[in-house]
Length: 429
Image 1 (cartoon, rainbow, N blue to C red):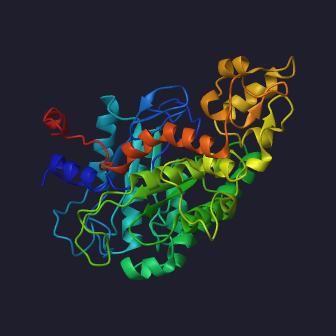
Image 2: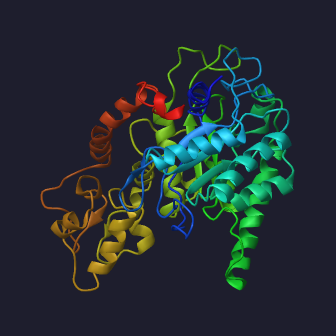
Image 3: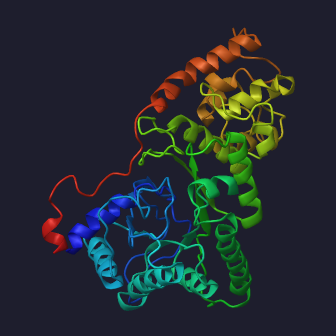
């Protein structure tokens, strides 16, 4: 099998892993090396400076010894198998980079033979890129649960970001759908990476040239909809992972049916894209808006509303706290007002130092007045001509968001393919 055929199989096999984000490191180009990871992002996303950038997102191998029921690459699935050698993968990455197709590499793998063997091959691929080809660009590597801690440490010294996919939200679900995995085997490398990142931070303070360990941190992925865990369960798990392991990001992947199995949703079931979207919105509130998981959902309300986003839903359930005076409210309270984002809060706090703000001023700052107007006053007054009740606010917010909800209900969310045309064929041979 030639390299092109392998690439076609292994990029397709990687599309169900969504743990991709901007790099989070400012590693610029260095003498004698090529590429950099400054403000870089991956997989058709936007970087901090506005560029649309991408990574080569690929598996080292899809020949996996595990038999996870939800995975297209599971041992018992009848799919074409392929495995890169470390040299093939390194050559491919460099050739793509030199042609300006990519800005880095996202490398994962099925478990070939055993976790140690798989991790060793990944390390060799990344080592070739770093040491032989002098590649200084962004590399995201997936740690293999069960691999020797020394191998995880070595991989972390070569990669910019690492991740360990927790995949299913509970040990019960893992036992049901992924019997070869356990919660302990997944959390152990996650804890090791967190510990090494913390140690490395201290080393860099004391020793300027200390080697960096996963400078962009670590992330994980949770599959949504393969099992019956509620949003409440998933969100509390995410909050715990952020606090315990200092993760940079938890990614949520709407389950796409790829196998006919009585333990899984039917093949005709549409991916729960709207549910995934609501979890991302709630995750943003946890990380940037000061919310706790148990504020957004509780034992009585365990799933998010399809027709209204989590922040609006929280505000409507706490109308006793509103309206807030825009010229006097604390930063923490402003962050909880629907229609006011983190940047807008910073602008409001800066602007009101030199004068009071009215509704027109808030428009110029970037506040979404259509949402915020029901929850704020300016100079002690509500917006001119505005009359509303709790029910009318709910109807207005649902009307605004219903189109979004309907659009998210259907369709399949897939990674773009490299192979819509045969244009790349001559370049890969």
